[in-house]
Image 1: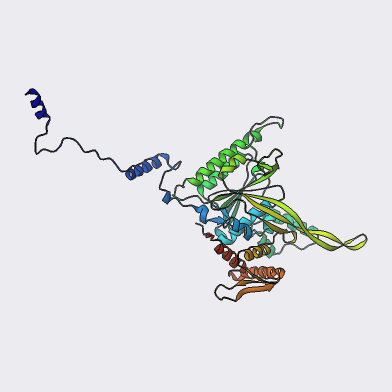
Image 2 (image 1 turned 180 degrees about the horizontal axis):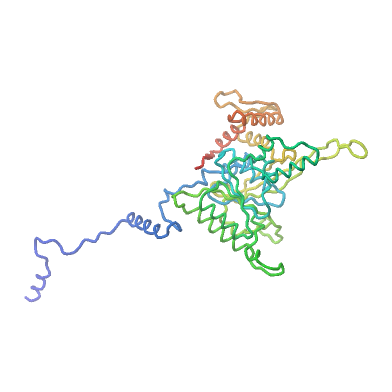
Length: 435
């Protein structure tokens, strides 16, 4: 009977609610929301966790074109934003010229809103080279006065008011930074990326960087181990983090960082490249694009040359071939793409029109029929927007049209060829940027 009584006492009286509280277990979605809120608040911008659907991919749609159509097609529109790309090659291959072309194209696309930063450590930027490359960058007053004095000494007239205005013209803003050590130069660059100020930052060059320890040594005989390897590694890691974490306004940073590097021969190389680069391991995993540039064959012809024995025909070089190859590609860019450009000395630049002709014919934007070349009119089958006989005449017509479009502000034939080539290759690029 005693055992029965105990069992009766353990039973809840009828009509009363259970004394046990119901445990409510949050769903996975609710727990994830709490985790994101707590973690993001605690990290305060140093790290984040969020829905993948909230994160944009500016490197897919925002590209920085070079204006060299055959190359831009392989780059799927240009160098990707929100990441690092490398221009690598031996000396005098044309690396500086290529990054000036990126700035030139940005000036054309963005106008006064264009922002570029040159992080220079080898020398001050060569603005005369930039102007020859078509970049609108202002010369310093000191340089203009020195050039004017030189003209007077040579018996030439002073610069006119219009010439001075041209030398002071700058589209957008081009800033330049220098520092005595790699650490200081990288700190400035990281700060600029963090604030998302510039559309493009050029680091020229990573091969000539000197660490703070090296810059502070009192004697050249003092041994310094490691050199700039450590700051380069730290720089690339921090830079990668900034591009993956959103800024304080919830925006993804969309600056394009282009690093210039010079190759060194590697006798013991087993990769087939045959060269080594500074910061190779640090850059290898971070960079989106590795564009290798080399000088190719000389371009020239036999021309009449006056010498001691009178006029004779001699072979005279008027340009050179520039070869390029994509050694590494991310963000929709395929590795292995390669091509060649003609650099003409008299024009101080690439023959863009011949390059557009090659790309246009290859991609169906230009129709070749015998010696005749034409741009089909997409709205009127059988008709042409422009047609010429022979490559020389066709390129001359393209160049003339570009000059006229600069005045009329209308779309040029070069723009039409580019747009048609992009369309044929399903390249959908936005050249619109936030101001």
